[in-house]
Length: 233
Image (cartoon, rainbow, N blue to C red; front, top):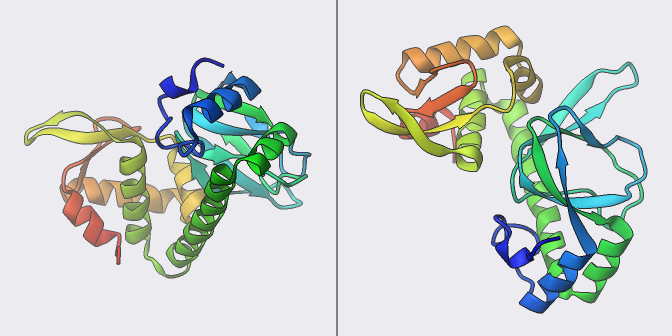
Protein backbone atom coordinates (compact mmCIF):
# COMPACT_ATOMS: atom_id res chain seq x y z
CA UNK A 1 0.00 0.00 0.00
CA UNK A 2 1.08 3.57 -0.64
CA UNK A 3 0.81 6.24 2.03
CA UNK A 4 -2.82 6.19 3.26
CA UNK A 5 -2.69 9.91 4.01
CA UNK A 6 -2.54 10.50 0.24
CA UNK A 7 -5.62 8.35 -0.48
CA UNK A 8 -8.26 10.24 -2.50
CA UNK A 9 -11.04 8.98 -0.19
CA UNK A 10 -9.01 9.48 3.00
CA UNK A 11 -11.45 11.98 4.56
CA UNK A 12 -14.62 10.08 3.60
CA UNK A 13 -13.74 6.42 4.07
CA UNK A 14 -14.33 4.34 7.16
CA UNK A 15 -10.73 4.89 8.31
CA UNK A 16 -11.12 8.70 8.35
CA UNK A 17 -11.00 8.93 12.16
CA UNK A 18 -7.66 7.18 12.54
CA UNK A 19 -4.47 8.97 13.58
CA UNK A 20 -1.47 9.09 11.25
CA UNK A 21 0.37 6.25 12.99
CA UNK A 22 -2.78 4.12 12.97
CA UNK A 23 -3.27 4.80 9.27
CA UNK A 24 0.31 3.77 8.62
CA UNK A 25 -0.27 0.48 10.42
CA UNK A 26 -3.55 -0.15 8.63
CA UNK A 27 -1.90 0.65 5.30
CA UNK A 28 0.65 -2.09 5.87
CA UNK A 29 -2.19 -4.58 6.32
CA UNK A 30 -3.97 -3.79 3.06
CA UNK A 31 -3.34 -3.80 -0.67
CA UNK A 32 -4.79 -1.98 -3.64
CA UNK A 33 -6.53 -4.04 -6.28
CA UNK A 34 -8.06 -3.03 -9.59
CA UNK A 35 -11.21 -4.87 -10.68
CA UNK A 36 -12.78 -4.89 -14.12
CA UNK A 37 -16.37 -4.07 -15.01
CA UNK A 38 -18.45 -7.22 -14.49
CA UNK A 39 -16.06 -8.81 -12.01
CA UNK A 40 -17.67 -10.18 -8.83
CA UNK A 41 -15.79 -9.48 -5.59
CA UNK A 42 -18.12 -11.34 -3.21
CA UNK A 43 -20.51 -14.16 -4.05
CA UNK A 44 -23.73 -14.58 -2.08
CA UNK A 45 -23.37 -17.37 0.49
CA UNK A 46 -19.58 -17.66 0.20
CA UNK A 47 -17.10 -17.27 3.04
CA UNK A 48 -16.07 -13.66 3.66
CA UNK A 49 -12.29 -13.70 3.38
CA UNK A 50 -11.72 -10.00 2.60
CA UNK A 51 -13.29 -6.59 3.21
CA UNK A 52 -12.53 -3.43 1.26
CA UNK A 53 -12.80 0.33 0.91
CA UNK A 54 -13.92 1.46 -2.55
CA UNK A 55 -11.37 3.98 -3.86
CA UNK A 56 -12.85 4.47 -7.32
CA UNK A 57 -15.73 3.00 -9.29
CA UNK A 58 -19.33 1.89 -8.80
CA UNK A 59 -20.49 -1.57 -7.74
CA UNK A 60 -23.85 -3.28 -7.27
CA UNK A 61 -25.02 -5.32 -4.30
CA UNK A 62 -27.41 -8.09 -5.33
CA UNK A 63 -29.27 -11.11 -3.99
CA UNK A 64 -30.72 -14.03 -5.95
CA UNK A 65 -33.67 -16.40 -5.72
CA UNK A 66 -33.32 -20.15 -6.14
CA UNK A 67 -34.42 -19.92 -9.79
CA UNK A 68 -31.62 -17.47 -10.59
CA UNK A 69 -33.59 -14.22 -10.62
CA UNK A 70 -31.49 -11.34 -9.33
CA UNK A 71 -32.51 -8.31 -7.31
CA UNK A 72 -30.13 -5.35 -7.02
CA UNK A 73 -30.45 -4.25 -3.39
CA UNK A 74 -27.86 -1.50 -3.28
CA UNK A 75 -25.30 0.59 -5.14
CA UNK A 76 -21.78 1.14 -3.78
CA UNK A 77 -19.75 4.25 -4.59
CA UNK A 78 -16.30 5.67 -4.01
CA UNK A 79 -15.42 5.83 -0.26
CA UNK A 80 -18.00 3.16 0.65
CA UNK A 81 -17.02 0.02 2.53
CA UNK A 82 -17.87 -3.48 1.34
CA UNK A 83 -17.75 -6.79 3.15
CA UNK A 84 -18.94 -7.96 6.52
CA UNK A 85 -16.46 -7.56 9.38
CA UNK A 86 -16.95 -10.06 12.22
CA UNK A 87 -19.12 -12.22 9.95
CA UNK A 88 -18.44 -15.51 8.24
CA UNK A 89 -20.67 -15.55 5.17
CA UNK A 90 -21.70 -12.96 2.62
CA UNK A 91 -25.50 -12.46 2.43
CA UNK A 92 -25.17 -10.85 -1.00
CA UNK A 93 -22.98 -10.62 -4.10
CA UNK A 94 -20.96 -7.51 -4.96
CA UNK A 95 -20.13 -6.94 -8.63
CA UNK A 96 -18.35 -4.06 -10.36
CA UNK A 97 -20.59 -1.97 -12.63
CA UNK A 98 -17.56 0.00 -13.81
CA UNK A 99 -13.82 -0.53 -13.65
CA UNK A 100 -12.93 0.06 -10.02
CA UNK A 101 -10.09 0.20 -7.54
CA UNK A 102 -10.34 -1.23 -4.03
CA UNK A 103 -8.29 -1.11 -0.86
CA UNK A 104 -8.54 -4.73 0.29
CA UNK A 105 -7.89 -6.26 3.71
CA UNK A 106 -8.03 -9.80 4.98
CA UNK A 107 -11.23 -9.96 7.03
CA UNK A 108 -9.56 -11.67 9.99
CA UNK A 109 -6.72 -9.12 9.98
CA UNK A 110 -9.15 -6.21 9.69
CA UNK A 111 -11.31 -7.63 12.50
CA UNK A 112 -8.29 -7.82 14.81
CA UNK A 113 -7.24 -4.27 13.93
CA UNK A 114 -10.76 -2.93 14.51
CA UNK A 115 -10.98 -4.59 17.93
CA UNK A 116 -7.81 -2.74 18.94
CA UNK A 117 -9.01 0.65 17.64
CA UNK A 118 -12.35 1.77 19.15
CA UNK A 119 -12.70 4.67 16.71
CA UNK A 120 -12.78 2.26 13.79
CA UNK A 121 -15.27 0.01 15.59
CA UNK A 122 -17.42 3.09 16.17
CA UNK A 123 -17.27 3.89 12.44
CA UNK A 124 -18.35 0.33 11.65
CA UNK A 125 -21.34 0.72 13.95
CA UNK A 126 -22.26 4.03 12.32
CA UNK A 127 -21.97 2.39 8.92
CA UNK A 128 -24.33 -0.39 10.00
CA UNK A 129 -26.90 2.11 11.29
CA UNK A 130 -26.60 4.21 8.12
CA UNK A 131 -27.24 1.10 6.03
CA UNK A 132 -30.31 0.36 8.13
CA UNK A 133 -31.58 3.91 7.54
CA UNK A 134 -31.02 3.51 3.79
CA UNK A 135 -32.88 0.19 3.85
CA UNK A 136 -35.85 1.87 5.57
CA UNK A 137 -35.80 4.71 3.02
CA UNK A 138 -35.68 2.17 0.19
CA UNK A 139 -38.68 0.32 1.63
CA UNK A 140 -40.58 3.62 1.53
CA UNK A 141 -39.46 4.26 -2.05
CA UNK A 142 -40.52 0.82 -3.30
CA UNK A 143 -43.70 0.70 -1.27
CA UNK A 144 -45.16 4.18 -1.67
CA UNK A 145 -43.38 6.31 -4.27
CA UNK A 146 -44.59 6.66 -7.83
CA UNK A 147 -42.43 5.83 -10.85
CA UNK A 148 -41.55 9.53 -11.29
CA UNK A 149 -40.62 9.86 -7.62
CA UNK A 150 -38.43 6.75 -7.77
CA UNK A 151 -36.51 7.92 -10.83
CA UNK A 152 -36.05 11.41 -9.39
CA UNK A 153 -34.78 10.00 -6.09
CA UNK A 154 -32.24 7.77 -7.82
CA UNK A 155 -30.99 10.59 -10.08
CA UNK A 156 -30.51 12.90 -7.10
CA UNK A 157 -28.49 10.29 -5.24
CA UNK A 158 -26.39 9.58 -8.31
CA UNK A 159 -25.75 13.28 -8.87
CA UNK A 160 -24.49 13.68 -5.30
CA UNK A 161 -22.24 10.62 -5.41
CA UNK A 162 -21.04 10.83 -9.02
CA UNK A 163 -21.68 14.39 -10.15
CA UNK A 164 -19.13 16.50 -12.00
CA UNK A 165 -19.39 19.92 -13.61
CA UNK A 166 -19.02 19.59 -17.32
CA UNK A 167 -22.27 19.40 -19.27
CA UNK A 168 -22.64 22.47 -21.48
CA UNK A 169 -26.11 23.48 -22.73
CA UNK A 170 -27.81 26.80 -23.48
CA UNK A 171 -28.04 27.84 -19.83
CA UNK A 172 -24.36 27.17 -19.15
CA UNK A 173 -22.36 24.37 -17.57
CA UNK A 174 -24.45 21.93 -15.54
CA UNK A 175 -23.79 19.17 -13.04
CA UNK A 176 -23.49 15.90 -14.93
CA UNK A 177 -22.73 12.25 -14.27
CA UNK A 178 -22.42 8.97 -16.13
CA UNK A 179 -25.10 6.43 -15.24
CA UNK A 180 -23.42 3.20 -14.08
CA UNK A 181 -26.70 1.32 -14.67
CA UNK A 182 -28.48 0.63 -17.94
CA UNK A 183 -32.25 1.11 -18.22
CA UNK A 184 -32.97 -2.53 -17.36
CA UNK A 185 -30.81 -2.38 -14.23
CA UNK A 186 -32.48 0.87 -13.16
CA UNK A 187 -35.81 -0.90 -13.51
CA UNK A 188 -34.53 -3.82 -11.42
CA UNK A 189 -33.33 -1.46 -8.68
CA UNK A 190 -36.55 0.57 -8.60
CA UNK A 191 -39.11 -2.16 -9.23
CA UNK A 192 -40.12 -0.74 -12.62
CA UNK A 193 -40.27 -2.10 -16.14
CA UNK A 194 -37.67 -0.96 -18.66
CA UNK A 195 -40.47 0.70 -20.65
CA UNK A 196 -41.53 2.75 -17.63
CA UNK A 197 -37.94 3.81 -16.96
CA UNK A 198 -37.50 4.96 -20.56
CA UNK A 199 -40.78 6.89 -20.47
CA UNK A 200 -39.81 8.64 -17.25
CA UNK A 201 -36.42 9.69 -18.62
CA UNK A 202 -38.09 11.01 -21.77
CA UNK A 203 -40.64 12.97 -19.74
CA UNK A 204 -38.00 14.50 -17.46
CA UNK A 205 -36.05 15.53 -20.55
CA UNK A 206 -39.13 16.97 -22.29
CA UNK A 207 -40.03 18.93 -19.14
CA UNK A 208 -36.57 20.49 -19.01
CA UNK A 209 -35.60 18.85 -15.71
CA UNK A 210 -32.67 16.92 -17.15
CA UNK A 211 -30.64 16.89 -20.36
CA UNK A 212 -29.55 13.61 -21.97
CA UNK A 213 -26.71 14.21 -24.44
CA UNK A 214 -26.34 10.44 -24.84
CA UNK A 215 -27.81 7.27 -23.33
CA UNK A 216 -25.48 7.24 -20.30
CA UNK A 217 -24.87 10.92 -19.50
CA UNK A 218 -27.36 12.82 -17.33
CA UNK A 219 -27.18 16.58 -16.83
CA UNK A 220 -29.32 18.18 -14.11
CA UNK A 221 -31.03 21.31 -15.51
CA UNK A 222 -33.50 21.97 -12.69
CA UNK A 223 -32.35 20.47 -9.39
CA UNK A 224 -35.12 22.13 -7.36
CA UNK A 225 -37.76 20.62 -9.62
CA UNK A 226 -36.08 17.21 -9.42
CA UNK A 227 -36.12 17.43 -5.62
CA UNK A 228 -39.83 18.30 -5.69
CA UNK A 229 -40.50 15.31 -7.97
CA UNK A 230 -38.61 12.98 -5.62
CA UNK A 231 -41.13 13.74 -2.85
CA UNK A 232 -38.20 14.31 -0.49
CA UNK A 233 -39.23 15.19 3.05
